[in-house]
Length: 420
Image 1 (cartoon, helix red, strand yellow):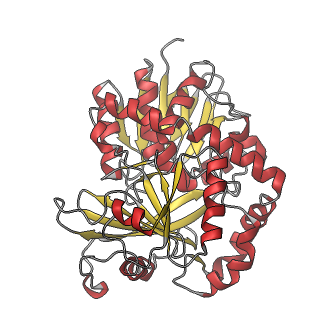
Image 2: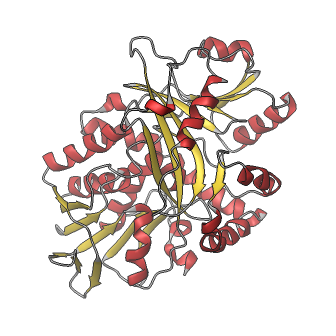
């Protein structure tokens, strides 16, 4: 394969992994972003390499729960009333993916790609001299009030899907995480997942490595893309850059760019919130990510202390963040762990509360592949809750496609043609 001049649009976790893979394969890569490396959804997420998440989000059991969830403005799911007409087509597509045949198809695709996620990160972070950023101590999903028979049903569902899992009672859960409250009755222990103490640093470590081996980073707000027989021309309105190939990896912001190329991308900004609490790093409050099944949020030990993350909010890209949703995470955490640092919402520090827009598609699958009508354009976007998890394997797959090599998995389920 001859050396190509490749532009990667988007310097989040998916983009930096694509850039690093392509540069390591001998191509000349320019990594472009309108804001900076890891400055959007990749910055304040939960830091959880969630390979256990093989079940698509669309399932019929959600439907009876949605009215109650949506009526609570601080509940785990919120839909801004004025945004309902805009979001409605997405929700209709989401519901159609609940049917058994589609759900099974999407689950099989997630299982196939997730099984490569951790190994690809181990290879990528080793090359970047940052292996310590991937911590393999599993994660817990804890239950306070859910009847034991339902917890056992969840356990069997994961086990039968090939997820490495153990069912724990209260004593076993407390042995792993002594700071859990005594009201935790059961836990599912996902033994082969991982987390990072700093997801933003993961982005920078990979981007730094990418530049050390010859890639170039350029702050550039791409406004238009022109496909030619010779390659691709991108423009920010005042400057043009020519490439042999480009990779579009700018998450929810990819929709506008793809519309100009004639592709329909039913992607929504599924806004998530996080809250950072500082504590003594020598005495961590938790040893691994702990998610609450009933309260629908997750706590992850970080280099600075503890990150609380979660919630789903549909309000578009322009509506101001509702940081009371981040504050609610603290209220939830007080019910799940015994010791927690003080937090006063009225005196929150700058940057302590965060909101990021997950790029979510209605079938829970990302778009990975060559653009059907543009042979010089490749797509790596729409990873919803699994952007961090699938970053490294997505980069590897994009490298295999551009080098015209066999791919590690069948990419047909991830092609954008499923929406067009």
